[in-house]
Length: 352
Image (tube, rainbow, N blue to C red):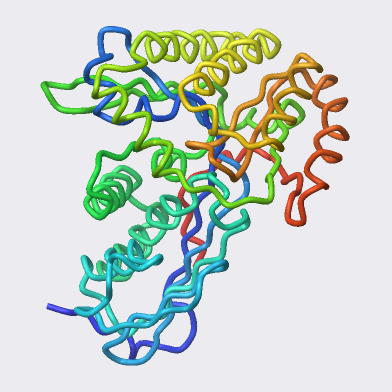
């Protein structure tokens, strides 16, 4: 059965927002790695940023699904002819799952397109929450975060045709500053959330963060695919074991408020990744990392690298010294920029 929303109204039917993230330890949330590495207790770390993606669903032409998103050409299809291989295919696939047409899905992201901040997964989580609310007609103020994560991840992984991690969806749904410990629960994949900073204190680390967009969009499939295929073929496993250890040490230092110590482990994790895939950062990314290390800060590419953003962590005074250096480095790229880096204490949020 298809739900046609076209006759409801011309104003917004529902608007939901969710934050993007910076991260460390990514790929360890993919089952291809965390099953074989389970004995080492792998975890990932992320900080949700107040660079929110807003998904607004409005009524539109009957029988049609129209999708608009900055950085992509607007597309419109009928519900049963929408190509899921399209650049916006994930969005069409979610609408198809809910059997909802007669809608215009407008995606407005505060982060640059394809910036390796988890944008597509964030939009998917927000859209799942929006369409769940629209279809169910619920007036509950808070969306079902866990259900939104699981469904958004399941659809995205199905379209990708390869195992996908879940940390982007979790950051979008829950917000804040968290470590995610990847475990096995009765033989099924699972995770344990470790809240590293209570939401009411999240803003206190804003001065310890710096995020730069390198001016080049990222393409994570190639690098992630390389990491996974080499791991499955038996390569680089000692380095992955060290990546697990570095990530856990980073989380422990961060939890203790030791920003300098966390920065050191952050640089170690980045160094190990660059050994496996030297092309994970380009010349601008390498310059940003070198500058951060000079100021005793940590630096890491976001997501799977290959373009997009890098982020830095360190004591507030060191980050203040690093900022003008990073500004000078990224100014060499037309679209390079320092992004506003504030912790988003809130995850999924129904705005209207």
